[in-house]
Length: 317
Length: 285
Image (cartoon, rainbow over the protein chains, first blue to last red):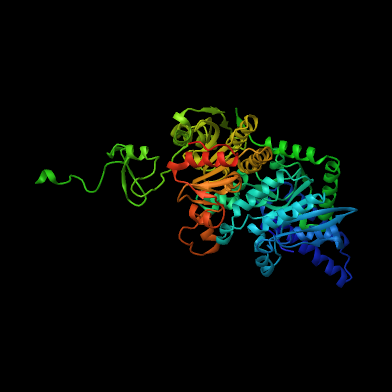
C-alpha cells in the first residue's frame, strides 16, 4: 500500500499495530489491550483525517496509485460475463479507452471507460488514461451498437484529459469529442455515468453525457486540472491547492451546483482501502439508476436528458 | 551644442506620457506590411498587401453578413454571474467588469438575426476581445437561444467561433456548456435546419470540442489557428517540434475537418450559396 503525505499518521499507526501483533505471536506477552488501543486510535485518526479533506487532498486521492481503475470495477461487477470489445473500425484500438458487454444480474450493459495502468509499463500502454480521437470514436461505436440492441450504457470516467498530442490533433481530437457529446445527448438508451477517478474537462465529458451522473466520493470533475489552471491563471505551478479550491471540483461541490446527481460513498480512507466494498457500492448504484430509467420510452429518455443539460448554466437575464 | 545634450541620462518619460501616432491610422500585418486603416476597413479587414485576415469582432462580422448592416440583436442583456465566487489573482466579477469596460460588450458572444442576401439568417458571433472569447454560461445560453430561434422560425444558424476555450472561472459550469450547445445542435439537426460553423482565429479548446466542429459544414478563414489542445501544450506534452502550419485552417482542411476555406470578402456569398444548394432553393445572385 502506498501512502499520500497527509496519510502518513495512518501509516505510522498501522506499522505500530503490525509490530504489536508480531510481538504477540512471537512471544508470550499479552498484547491484546495494546493492540486494541492502537486500533481505536487508528480508526479515530482515519476519521479525523478523512472528515476534513481539502479539495487538493481529494484530487490526490482520486489519483492514488492503489485506486481501483475502470477495468477493476467492471471485472468485479460483471465477473466472467464481461466480454471486452475493441477498435474504432477506422484507425486502431485505443488502449486508453476500453469497452465491452457485461451482465449485472440478468441485465446486459455496455461498459465504456478510460483505463489507467498500475505500473510504469502498463501506464505507458494505457497512455496514462488519456484517449486519442480513435478512443472516443471506439466509444461512440460501442454506444451506437448498444443503442441498436436496446442495451443500456454505463460509462466510467477516469482521465487526466484527452491526449494533447500531435497525431491526436491531426486526427481531430476536438471533433471526436464534440461528435460524442452530440450523439450522447440523443442516444436512445439509458446512459449511466460514474466518475470513478479523475474527470478532466472535455476528455471526460466526451463519454460523460448521462441520464444519471454519479461521482465517487473522492473524485474530481472540472473544466481544467488544478495544475493547468494554476499555470494559466497564476502563471506558476505552485498554486494548485488554491486552484483546486477555486474550481469547486469535488463531488460535494458538483452536487451543490446540480451538475451531478448523487455521490457514491467510499469506504473510510478511500476506494482503495476496501476495494470490494467500493465495487459493491458502484454495482448497487448502477442497478438503482437503471431501475429508475428502464421504464422510460426512448423519446421520454432523450427529452429528459436534453432538458437536463439545457438547464445547466448560471447567468443574469 | 549644449542645448542638444540630455540633462538626465536614459529615457525618463513614463509609458503613459509617451506620444504615439494616433491609433487606427495604420495597421501593421504580421508579415510587416503597413496598411492604411480606412483601406483595411474597405477590404473587409484583410490586408490588401498580403491577404492577412485581421482579427475582428461581432460588430464587423454583422456588418459583413447582414444586408445594409440591419439586424436585430437577441438577448443583448444576458450577463455572467459569479456562482463559484471564483478568485485567482483577481476576482472574477472584477475581470468581467474590466472586460466590459474595455470592450463595451456584455460577454464573449453576440447573436444577430437579419437578412443576408434577402433571406433570414441567425448569426452567433464570438468576441475574442472579451476574456479571450471564453465560453461560460452566457455564451452557452446565447447559442442555445440562438438555436431555439432558428428552430422556431426555421432559419439557418451560423456560429462564428473565435475563442480560447471554456471559461475557467465558471469551471464545470463552463464545461457543461459543451453539452448544452450540443443538445441544441442535435435538435436543429433532427429538424433539418442547416447549421454552419465558421472557425476564425483562434478556435481552440472547448469550442473545438463542441459547436465549432459540429456544423453541417465546417468552414474557416485562411490561416486561423484551430485545435483542441493549444500548440504550446502539444509541444510541451510531446517534446516534439511542431510541423509548419500545424493547426492552421489549411492543416485542418488537409486532414479532413473542414469543408472549405473562405476568404472574408467571399464569406457572405459562400454561406448563402451553400444554404441555397443544401435547401434546394434557387441560387441567389
